[in-house]
Length: 95
Image (cartoon, rainbow, N blue to C red):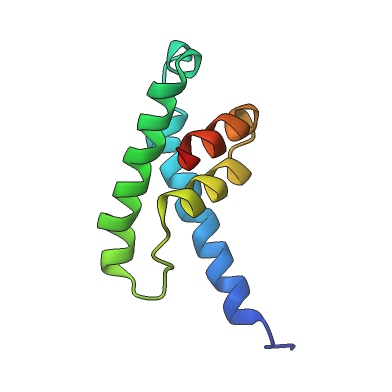
């Protein structure tokens, strides 16, 4: 069996599971009107980011300690329903 890249695959699988957990915990539980307000949505992404740092990275040194921008990008890639907001978030993170 080909072991090259197996570690990074395992890492990305782990990251996928984490992002799914965070999306389910913070984003998918939002009532519809939360998505109407970009500020509220951003607040949820921020909360998910803090949870990731405090609960996942703290307990697993193999995980990347992502900044808010990188974390948000990954979450967006992972959550199709968030895709429409990606442009707004990128703008928001610049300011």
